[in-house]
Structures are given as C-alpha cells and as structure tokens.
Image (cartoon, rainbow, N blue to C red; front, side, top):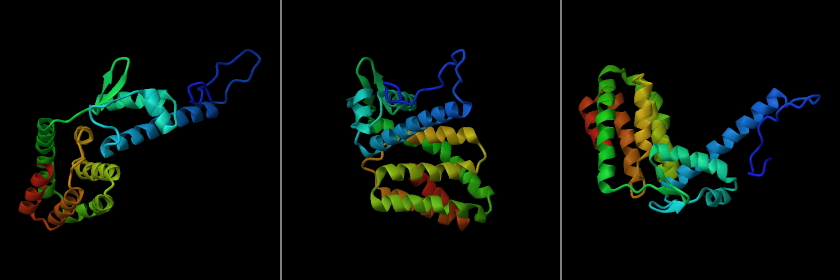
Amino acid sequence: MNQRGERAGPVPAVPGQRSTPPSAAVRGTVERTSVRRQVLDALRAALVSGDLVPGAVYSAPALGERFGVSATPVREAMQQLAQEGAVEVVPNRGFRVAERTARERAELSEVRGLIEAPVVLRLARTLPADRWTALRPAADATVAAAARGDLAAYADADRAFHRALLALAGNEQLVRIADDLRRRMVWTGCDLRADAAQHVALLDALEGQDLAGAEHVVRRHLG
C-alpha cells in the first residue's frame, strides 16, 4: 500500500532479485481499477440522490475522506464525470456539480426523443411479439426501485432497461450515445412510479403489437 492509500503497481526488477510475479502485477491493476469503479459508482449515486448538491464545489481529498479512499481514485472518477457533463473542473479547488436549467432538461428530453423514439417504433413494426418478453425483468427492476423510492437504484435500473431496449436495434453506437444522454438526466423531482409504469405499459403495447399504443407511450415517456 503506498502513501496515497492505493496498492502499488509492479516493482521494477533489481539485479539478483526476483521480479514481481506477473499474476501479482495483474491483480494489483485489477484491484486499483475496481476501487476506481466503486468510487465512480458511489459518486454517480450521490449525484442522482442529491447528496452532492448542484452548484456546490467538492475537492477530491474531501470526497476521498468521505468514501474512505485516497484522493487519486476520486480525482480519476471525477474526470470521467466531467467528460460526461455531470461535473465541471474548478482549477485549484476541485469539481463543481453541474446545474441543469429547465431549458437544458427540455433540450435533453428533446434529443432523447429524436434518437430513441424512431428506433423503438421501427422495432415495434419489425420484431415479433415474443422478443419483448425478455425485457420484463428489466422493467420489473425499475418498478421495484421506484416503489422503494431509491433514486440511485432507479437510475441504474432505468438505464439498464433502455440499454436492453435499444440493443435490439443492433447498433452499439446508438446505445452508447443514448446512454450518455441518460447519464445527464436529473432524477430529483421525477415521479419514479409513473416513469416505471410507462416501461410496463410500453412492453404491454409492444407484446400486444399495438403500434398506436406503443407510439403514444414512448413519445410520452421520452418527452
């Protein structure tokens, strides 16, 4: 363990001394990656739940102390969140949590509708009804998270549902772009139960090959 609280990487070989076994080096890399991923997931959950307040500035060392890790994985995770637009870098201070104006939220919804709605409606016209059955567990997960009022769990379940839905189109770039847009959403103040119910209603319409009903639900859901 180094001074920054992280597991050290492979030690350079010294003449006459056995070098670090490759398996140990790989294990150290995996463990560091795992810590960074855990911190990233925790930060995302805190952003969704509002524990990290929009407009507030947080330093990596302070967040590291909060999560029980060094500043380094926090800083790396925050850089990832900055690329996603969830936070912005404040030189010599840390990271400011992004504030979404009403206009920005409306623009995100519009872009999502323009990208996702035509794809879902095309799939509704081309896929057999039994293909939609596999999405039921994902929809049920959103319903369960909404019933608990768990914002972080709901955000994850909602992303999983929409990823599975769009993946049926066979376009990985579409899935990635839509997923990036979804990460920028603000869940606070959202009616989770109503949102989850629309997932179920959409699958009901798709399985019943009710194209008009599916279009009504998907446009309402994405709008």
